[in-house]
Image (cartoon, rainbow, N blue to C red; front, side):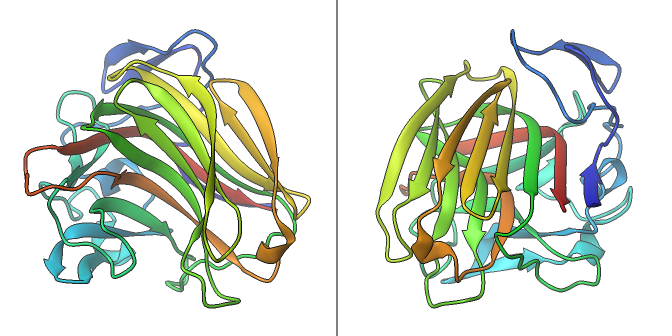
Length: 264
């Protein structure tokens, strides 16, 4: 198994964040302990060699992308959209309602895209076992934010995600599974956590045809339609805001305390 780990130490129900004890919600487990130095850039606390960052700035239709080489290290890249929270060391993503978007989306994002260690874009087949695990909290959200994805890669013309995990302003956690590469999404209610509370998820693929989702220890399974089998995939995580307006102050702010990607 090859494992890409951000903050790989194990944790118990109470996690220590930059010297501050933070209680996780009942039933929560965490795949990574948030021992982070608030004085360092995210790259000083997290292994960002397997990610690149997309931000909601740049020219129309062409958001700025920050390569992993610039993200790494204690003095690595950070700005208003991607930074270490000085209070608890969280790797924080801010996506306002008004921002530069990709050509295929109306919504701004501050989001990591999975990469290979050699600098190439991750692009893996559905066969085998693939997991994205995170410990996080939504600091603020106007309406709805996507905090984790499996996205279609090469193999066809579709630019759709296979699955998206949403957090809504009322605290509901909702999984969106794509019906086909042409579009159409089915929503599944999978949990509830109050805004500002820490929780965790695992988005996994097993057997080449099943999505296994775990939220705070509760697991559900979803079939992958055969129309997706020709496509390769990659993970994304961060703050992909799901609302838009002319406001640069409304939006979604998400802090991550642990993030782990594994393939076998």
